[in-house]
Amino acid sequence: MADVLIVCVREDEPQAKALAEMFEAAGFSIGGAPSSDGALRSSGAGVVVWSHASIRSRPFLDAAQRVINADKAVVASLIEPPPPSSVGNSPWCRRNHSAIRPRRTARRTASVRLAAPSFPESAAT
Image: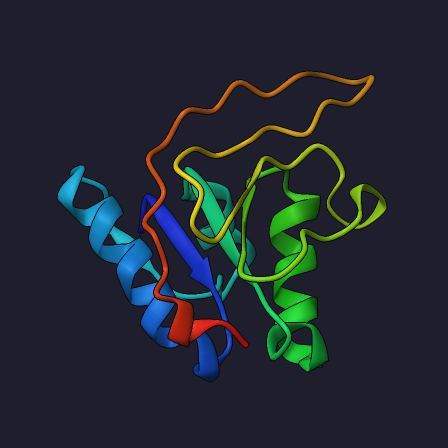
């Protein structure tokens, strides 16, 4: 089973690949969107690549919601981050930022410090 699952749409594969390479370089194994509850349970995190293309995809939104509900999501946002009501206490990062910025919630404060790759401006959707 994979350490990190990456949930994205085809249009965002170049950015997802950059994230996968970053995690692989740090020694983590990578998988795609969770194909089963067991795969999701055994993973350490699920990176949700949030973009204009992804938010129009019902299969993406369903897979992303499963990862968020399992409390394993880290949102990599290529556009404005999703509203807190959509992602709960999941940490998130924005394109061209150097650190994952945690969302603060009443339930907990995440403290995540991961280097995030800079996505090329041409990849913006």
